Length: 288
DNA sequence: AGGTCAACCTGAGCGC
DNA sequence: TGCGCTCAGGTTGACC
Image (spheres, protein in one colour):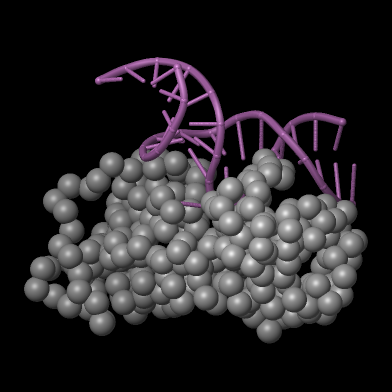
């Protein structure tokens, strides 16, 4: 499911229920996700206060009192949902529905907080993960030490992108998906950004010209910002924390639009190809 | 060293 | 209705 805009949307939605609040009860309902939970995971979270929620790459980060950070990755199908503990209660600007009496299928972790709120983590494919790491050691942690620049940060600009691509022999599509270069892009937004920049996903990264890289850097920022604004893209699994769909999928130019007419080229038909095992969608007429 | 690919897992959709 | 096949917003480790 989730790329940067979806993770950002979920993280922001979790803030009223988590930020500044304490975990009153945490329950893991199986022993692992993609990787095992750390030892005594639930027990170590009980009573801890969430100081700050933020996002790095496709990870949701919750800095806790006591110097540890709860790290959450949603994998392909992970979803987090916020419920009210009490039907009459309102939190922040949102209404919260009451939590169901029984957890639903694939609800793997349940967090109760003193907001009061209940947050469930549901992930039917279990490609997600959760762990706890020392807040001071995030940058050097295995999960983060090789993660690249945030595409919405000041560090991501035309000069950066030129440098990052200059020796890359891989197709530009694969290079943009590489989290070691740019953190947070995934299959949807790479396809969409390449369409906006009129660059074929098959082009060798090192052969993309400087003026095209300038267009591309801009397209990446633009598409991500628009998608965050839209609450992400809901294809199968992504929902916001109160069940609302994202709506950026209605603005796709190419993703999942195989055989449809390109909105830019007169007779361009969107084509699907497979690159390093993943679908790429593009218009062979206007993307060169 | 850099690039590609299968594996991890469940569910939805499609053709027969 | 059901079976078998394909595909899915990601990441990783084994392999060329």
